Length: 127
Image 1 (tube, one colour):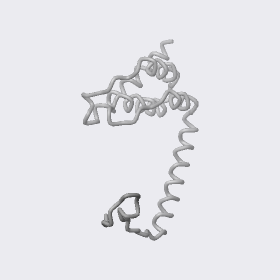
Image 2: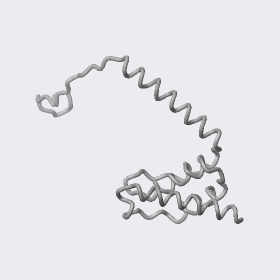
Image 3: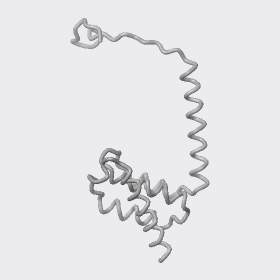
Image 4: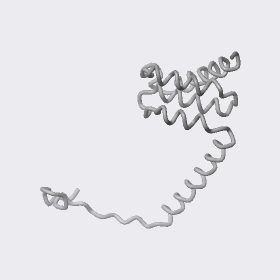
């Protein structure tokens, strides 16, 4: 039980640090009580420092009004991911991103002018 409490305190302290980096850190949004209970139930079992950082970022983003809300389903999914899986997923995303960038760089962009007359009821004016 003490380890669980220490895990939560570590994650909360890191989350405060992340919210202080945001310009809207003072105007945090309210977090749903049920969401917070779910978060705590999952996060208290996280003792790895790398994973605690991820959970701290989740908590910080949940309190930041300009960030999208994180659903309880996303929390549950995150609870299934260990450090090795997180690192593998990070590598996978890097490979995909490099592949997409190469594809975009090798593809010529074609600009097609759009005219309001192309839309129903539109005028014949170029955008």
